[in-house]
Image 1 (cartoon, rainbow, N blue to C red):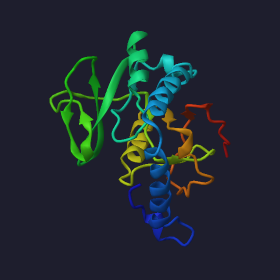
Image 2 (image 1 turned 30 degrees about the horizontal axis):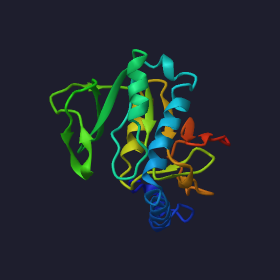
Image 3 (image 1 turned 90 degrees about the vertical axis):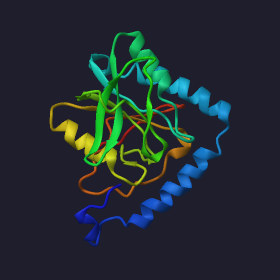
Length: 202
């Protein structure tokens, strides 16, 4: 996640602690069998589309998978099938900008190996987000990939109105405790191939 002034406080988690957890969990994810990853992605899609409230979102923010990340495309297919619109993120100097994506449209290569919508498409503002992550715990906190893009996107979109956030991952990405900071916002839902993760809300 991006550096934050609170990291200078004595009780703030150290960047090295998050980096260590991130590396450990991603190694476990990388070790998963390819067929198991594909099957897990399909199972997660079935669970996600049944989450109350998601069907009410006219525009849902998804993402395109990289590396061994769980594949959200089965979710996107199901959203299209029931008439919902989908947006994908674009990394910009000001953070993530979401642009609507339609089935079959070409994507362009972005930074970090990402596949992104074209630059000429207008910015849109999803009211639900399917969120990638490196690690999670049962409070709904997540560790991202170290840049803080989704933290800032969630904060910005939440400022426009109600935002439903759904993290997706493999069960091997769970950790006992994510060293969260005061500005971190727990996800509303977390789903793995085992099913919905029971979240402990503060």
